[in-house]
Image 1 (cartoon, rainbow, N blue to C red):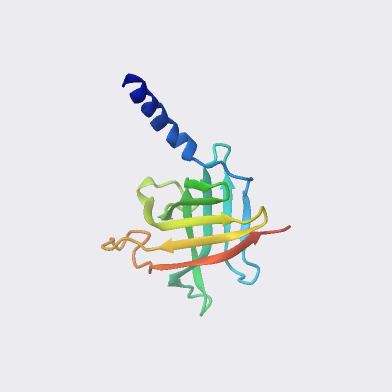
Image 2 (cartoon, rainbow, N blue to C red):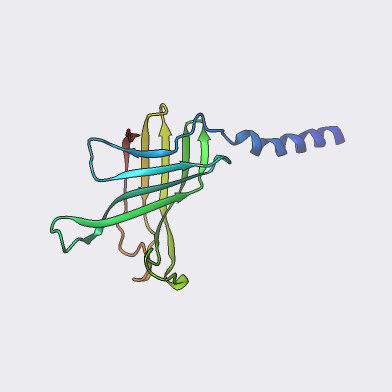
Length: 163
């Protein structure tokens, strides 16, 4: 019985390590869809297989008064995530706000709100898909960076930006 219990404990301890996928390649780069100018994703993969992604797009809440018909930028970030296979990563997405780069740091200006998830699925080292599911929580204060952000989701074909 003790051998059976020891075997079960050893197997249970090995499951988390086994369940973690190792990325098939380093996908760090700028990714976009050349048919849809104006948005993109910067994807940075770290040596510990963690990833950071920034989706730069346009904020449907913020018309740009200096250019009618245009909108101000919106960055949605993913820090971390889990490799669900050697070619697929899923992580939480956040909207943030803070002090502008040229200003003195103000820690009270920092705001971070989870608004959904990102999934990256790479079919090769040069093409893949980017799936986003954005659904901010309800009841946010008007000072929250995700206040009035509408829910939206979709999947975009992406490719590496060639230089």
